[in-house]
Amino acid sequence: MQSLHHPTVIPLPFAPHPQSHTLHFFNKQHISSSIFSTRSYLTRTRCSPPSPATTVVSTSSLWEKGPIEGVLFDIDGTLCDSDPLHFYAFRQMLQQVGFNNGVPISEEFFIENISGRHNEDLCGILLPDWDLPKARNFFQHKEAYFCRLAEEQLEAIEGLDKVCKWIEERGIKRAAVTNAPRPNAELILSMLKLTDFFEEVIIGNECERAKPFPDPYLKALQALQLSPQRSFVFEDSVSGIKAGVGAGMRVVGVGRRNPKELLQEAGATFVIQDFNDPILWTQLLF
Image (cartoon, rainbow, N blue to C red; front, side, top):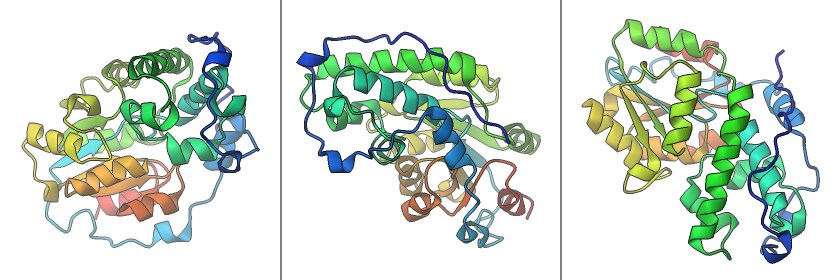
């Protein structure tokens, strides 16, 4: 079984004096005292066996409205295994600025409060006492740090090439829809050799509202002239699933990192572990 090595040590890009930015608004009972390395974050979530609940799905759930004409993909955590790199970058940089009195964030905190959210929202969630320009500057540096990690260690989700080939052979329309900044999205698509695969790349902060609002997915449907009934979404986060469902589409949850139960509660039609999952191919080849 593959595992991602602990990220290469790279000097942090953002180093304000921590004394002037120490944050106290999180009660420590909300922060897990067990801090996992990126390796253990990956191993613990990747090795969890599929829940029996994810194997009980209707064999017509993706085809019940007729032929599939469009497939929309999230990017981070869906096309590629980037969440551990985001987790590492956030953990290092938040600790550096004194977040939660310098106690590193846990993977549970990352999943519940950060994963899938837009940076503009995270300014208020993580740094509510900072003025907005300074908070935005922090996230710009965080994204640059993530990109430096990704250039060396990004991995595609298993089976991605297989599902992309299936889509391409059938002439199905496709778009990438993400809350990531455009430079990050374009970097990842380039590294995965998917720049020419997607007909549209929709960015959350270029819409009126980002995920979890449905606006980015509605914009993708409009751009590709698709009906929601004949399209579906691949998403790995609660925020993204809510956005896809809100746009009227069925959503396949990619439960690689985030708990399957949370994805199901958010409205996922069913949850897969990766793109080789037999559950997915039972649906696609129905």
